[in-house]
Amino acid sequence: MTLDEVRKEIDKIDDDLLQLLNKRMLWVQKVGEIKNKSKEIIYRPEREKQIIERLNNQSDGLLSRDAIEAIFLEIFATARNIELPERIAYLGPEGSFTHQAAESRFGALSEYMTLPTIKSVFEAVETERVRFGVVPIENNQEGIVYETVDLLNETNVNIAAELKIPVHFCLATEAENPAKIKRIYSKDIAFRQCRGFLNKYFEQHQPEEIQVESTSKAAKLAAEDPEAAAICSEIAAKLFRIPVLFHNIEDNSNNRTRFFILSKKFENLPSGNDKTTLIARLPHTDEAGVLASFLQDFKDFNINLTKIESRPYKGDEDFNFWFFIELLGYFKDDNFQKVLEKHHESIKILGSYVRNA
Ligand SMILES: O=C(O)C(=O)C[C@]1(C(=O)O)C=C[C@@H](O)C=C1
Image (cartoon, rainbow, N blue to C red; front, side, top):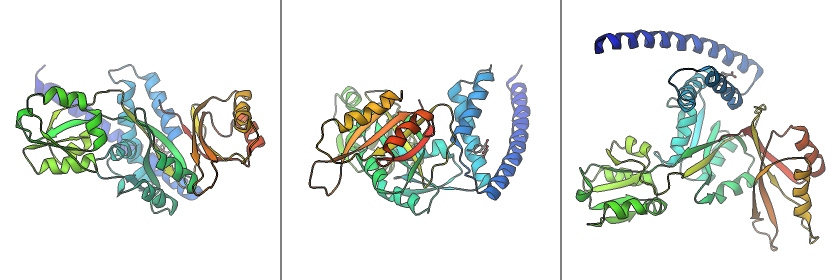
């Protein structure tokens, strides 16, 4: 077969795909009408997960599970926009990893609001200026983002979903090779995480390292200066149209960040593989074992706790703490309800959502 002939076959399939996608969107529009009448929530991560699992189980072609997921997440994001265009706020600037996380879940078509601080994302969700907000919660190398944890305690905002994305840095530059680079812009943490690469590739001449407040600012500066490079995300390099000289330059390729998708309410149904996040404000007491017996109740009801972080009460004279706790399961599960019966005064549930690996 010639290239032209093969391309003709691809064209035919693309025509069919487009027709099928348009047909799918007609049904999606109907879902939108039904939900509009019943005031039901549009974003149903547990339903999206079920669809992806079902398709993956029946797939016998070249597409991996990740490929199926990537394609369908974009279809769902487009579908949600047809049902009801929703605005999403994320911790900026544009080109940040949080932007990348937001786009991976809400697609290229959604309307985004870039906000400068985690607090401003919480505020936008709380005042319902946006439907969802995306903020980082933890990095597997650097640990928890305390600002996010504290705001979950202080505001009336819930968790609709979690997602984890790999943090890959690239070296983006207009320069043709490392020898021509005189300056490298990036954020302190990115320099730290790419030290091995920098030592190896800039052994002979050491470019000046200039710290800026974000990796996207670094990309912007490198786009304007042919003798400069930026250590930034791929999305930032793309945004500022700078060629990527080296991909994945971080020393530890297991570097991943977990994000929360925030919403004013949480209305997820159980998916069969859920996680619940809550805040526990245990009574202030000097009695020994208050925390131990609280945790024992989870063990007794066979609940797997996956995280516990203690945080101080701001403004408190004493050294009292509240706890940020995560566990496997859905908040209406029988065993969790038993714990809740005992401790309902101490527990504030922030959300039950599909557990992401
Ligand atoms: O089934 C729904 O509730 C829909 O709104 C449809 C649909 C889809 O495209 O399949 C879109 C958005 C939801 O997040 C889940 C699924």
